[in-house]
Each structure stands twice: as structure tokens, then as C-alpha cells.
Length: 540
Image (tube, rainbow, N blue to C red):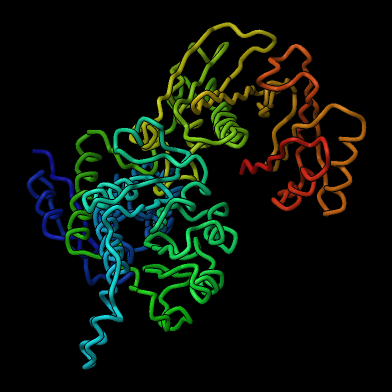
């Protein structure tokens, strides 16, 4: 008789998850009060491990876990798990990414209603013996416009709930297909400025990245309606606190509801004293149901991993099959970089379709891992959920973005090529690349309808410009003045190119630099007559 797999639960996950494991035939043991030393001593006897945020699963623990096949994290993040070490030992790491989306959406609505009707302020006044009915008169949600910045899972749930209150919803998220907006009855903002101009309430549901930090700043607030109200149940650094204070003081912003802050825990902040600011201590994901749901979903993934079923929320995945690795492996980094590049050069608007074409020897293989790498480059840091090799295709599908993959076994001029096209409405952006040499260095071959042969590096800066003397020198001077060293450069010019896509008199310059090029330096270059477009792209 085969011995039942043993599962260790180190933290409280709710009764449902533990019961599911038992029903699935596993032996369940709880180590809720185990010390680190006891965990290290006993982990070798378990096949599965269920944790939340307090248990650290590092390389030392994994080395002791000789039987371990899966770690289930009852929650969204996996910061307390050494995923690389787990992958090296063949241990699957899975989380529960859907566990708190309803809870976060509902808390957003709770704050939205409280902000509109001054509920906390009225409660405080009355509980302190003051009947201040007229002072706390609010506004209705009916016929008001809610602007949603970041239209992923949580943003879409908020939209549906706001519509039930009779609100008009407008959202900005370039990584959601236009069809998805139509399905949900939500207006698609082509630019954030459109959302600012139309919204009575604005709620943030963006990921926190270097690109989104400080998203709502003085410039953004200046473009909003007078009397707008702001909500943040996403990440504290998305708002510049000092700029929010200024617009609250001026009356430009009528009120704010904040669940997250620059640093946490936080109990003292100038905004806390504002009568028109509502604050909660990061309660967006804090409900009993969310905790139970996270435990149950993590247990489902553990069951799937130990029974050979599909682990749908795995953070890591097995490597490419050995017979394909020699051919496909070198192209995985290239495809990720092409995904990042095509997103960078696109003119904006929601992504409707991604076309990936493979030419040459790689086209004879199963290229789905390469397409996934393209999607990773496209989406990383641009969604409200962590993107990995397992969930990237499903995230794209949920966002209404169509992905097509075609293969041709012959390639012109090169042995193998990868071509990636992003389609947004009538706009098309395309990049082409390959790998060259024994070390399979990634090379850029086409961008903005111009051809190159430039080895890709971590930091790139791209310019479209009128093909007249002095333009290359101007770029070099500006970068030099700002202490940025140019490592390599290439210029693409094609007089036979489509005039509408890229005028024949316009050339394209691509430079690799030793350090990132800040946005203000790109803007300085663009201010020169004849420089049409500039983009800085980091491929790390």
C-alpha cells in the first residue's frame, strides 16, 4: 500500500483548506507553534508545505526538505519563499492570486461610499455629542463618473459595483483589450488626461513600479475636475503625499480615502488630521472570507501538484524539455526583450492583439515558451498582479488581448528570426530580433520600420528624427552633458518604407548606454527641432 503524502501546515489557513487536503487522502500535520529549529529538523518528512507570510522558506530549509514537492502560499505575494532555490530543487511554488480581489474591491466601495457621504466624520461627531447634520451633507453616486486607473481584476470588480450605484465608469489601462471595455460597459480612456478631465471620483488600482510611483502628483491633480475625490486601496507610493496635501488645502480635491501609505505601519501623518480625509490601516485584503479563500486556493494547488494535475497558479515551472532547450533556450531572453521593446515604441492606446512570428529552425519546435516570454516582457510591472511563466497567457486572455503565433521554417537573411507586432486599434508597432554567435547574443534587427543589427544591452534609448546633419551629434552632446556613456549605436534609414508608418525622411537611432537614461534627459533631447520621438527602455 502506497504511503499517503504528508502535508505540513505552518500557519492558520482556515478549516476549509485543511479539510480539502484530508479529503484528498493526504496526512495533515500542523506546526503552528514550531520554532525555526524544529521546522528545520522535521521538514524532511513532508511532501507538501502550506504557509502564509510568517514562515520563511529559504535555501537552508529547502536543502533539508528532501521529500518536498510543493510549497503553497495562502496569499498573493511569495516574498518569504526563495523561488530560485525551490526551482533548482524541483519544488513547485504556488500562491492564491485570486483570494483577495473581491475583498479589495468591496473595501474600495466602502471607502467610496464613506467619502461621498462623510460617514466616518458624522459618526465621530455624533459619538462625541455633536449633532452636525448640515456640516456632513454629502453627494450622491448616481450619475457621477468614477475614473479607474488600472483596470485589472480588482478594477473590473469595482467597475461592476459602481455601475450598480448608477455611476458612469471610465478606466485607463493600456494592457486591456478594447473588447473587454465594451463587454463591461466601461469607457476606455486613451490617455490618463481624459480620465482626469471627466471623473468625479478617481480610484487607483495600479501596480507599484518605477513607472507608477508618484503617478498622482501635482501635474496630474492640476488636470482633474475641481472637487474631485481620490481613493487609494492599492499602494501608498502611487500618490505624492505632499502634492495631495496642497490640492486638499486649495480645495481642488474635495476629499481623499486612503488605505495604504508610503511606509507601514503608520500612525502619524499630516493627512490624518484633515477633516475630509478618511484613512484605514491597510484593510483592503483583511476579511475572514479572504483568509479562508486564500487557504483553500493554496490547498487546491498543493493537491494539484501532488496528484499530477495542472498547477494553475504556480510561480515557477519546470524548465523547457531537454530536447528543445538547445534550440529554444537562447531565444527566451530575446523574446522577453522584444516584448518590452514593442510595448515601449507603441504609440499608446489599449493593446488589442499581439502577433508573434517565428522563422527558421526555431519554428520547427513548440514555440509556446517563447511566446510566453514575449508576454512577460510586455506585461511585467504593468498589471495589478504578479506575472509569471504560468499565468501570463491567462492574464492576457482575461484582459481581452488576442495572441497569435505563426511559424515558418525559412528565414530571409538570417538563420532564425522572431518578429513581434503589437496592434492597438489602427496602430501597429513591430520589432524583429535574433541571436548571433556562440553565446547567442540577442540582436535587434528592426524597429519603427527601420533595419539595424545592434546587440541588445540592459539600457537602450531610441529616437526618431528628421534625417538632417547634426542630429546624431546633438544626441551625443546631451547624453555626455548628463554623464551618460554611449556603449554602442546604430542608425536605421529606409527610403522605401511606408510613408504613413514612418516617413522616408525620418531616420531612427538606437543607442545602448552604460546607465539608464532618465526621462528628463530624453525630454531634453526631444526639445531639439527635428527630434520627433524619444524612448528610454530598460531591459533588465
